[in-house]
Amino acid sequence: MQQRNKNVVYLVDDDEDDRMLIRDALENISLGCTIFEFSDGEQLLSRLPAHLEADAPSVILLDINMPRVSGMEALVKLRSNPATSHIPVAIFSTSSDARTIAAAYTAGANAYLVKPVSMSDYQRIACAVTLTYLQADNCLPGEATYKWPQTKPKGVLVIEDNKDHWNLMRPAWSKMPQELKPAHADSASTAMAYLESAYHGAAPPVGLIVLDLYLPDRSQGLQLLSNIRQFYSQRKLALVPIIIFSISEDMEDVRASYRRLASAYIPKSTDLTRSAFRLKNVCMAWLAMIVMPKLA
Image (cartoon, rainbow, N blue to C red; front, side):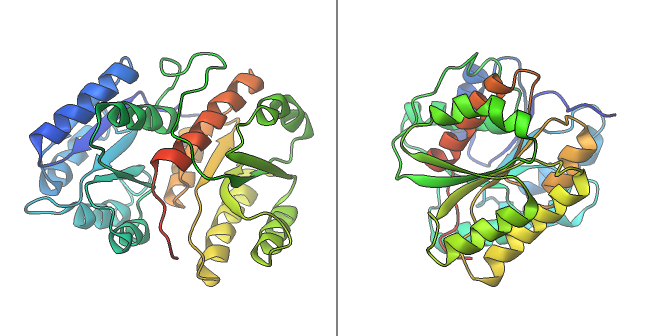
């Protein structure tokens, strides 16, 4: 079984000052992470094959507007190449244009971050990236909760078929801030029924989905991930983040999830209560810092 790779960030941006700001924030928050810098998409694509064995990226932070090969062009090439289609890509751009955001997700982005103007927001983005894509122990030890900007209340659908796991996680979910309103589904069928009910207004709207990969096996979890994305697409609904929360740290499971454009993959530790607190912060980070498309 292949274990998850170490904390490696590829930072792709033609603006040297922007690279410095996010690099400093990441090194401050995620102790021990390794950062490789690229000045445009062409440089990333030409150098990436040589890095894949020893220094494969945990995440690529990708600007859009760059010379030679733009971020959008690089993203399309990454997704069309089987050797790189599993690498999570977070767009990191000054643009907050709704069409640009929608195009990025259509092209295969896992997340979209708007470049901030304050140092405190750079720190928040660094923490969101660390929690979501890197090993987060240095970011939020124990049951700490990061102070995220307040957001509108959102429903969170937690799809977990293991009753023992759900019962162990419930204390953390019960302490959720008012922004997060969790609901539980114990199977693929009950999850899809809940989404259908929410679509028709009979259940609270869902703003984020947490999905256990093994339902009870991987193939069912991956199929449900695809079915959920299809559900939103067919109804022309704005996609919501789908975060995989799994006991498995096998890289094949991680890669398979990202190939199907999961928003994030968070491993459960043996301490499920602690894992649930990390997951809570990941959910808060997504709602506060990561921009989703307005329309499907």
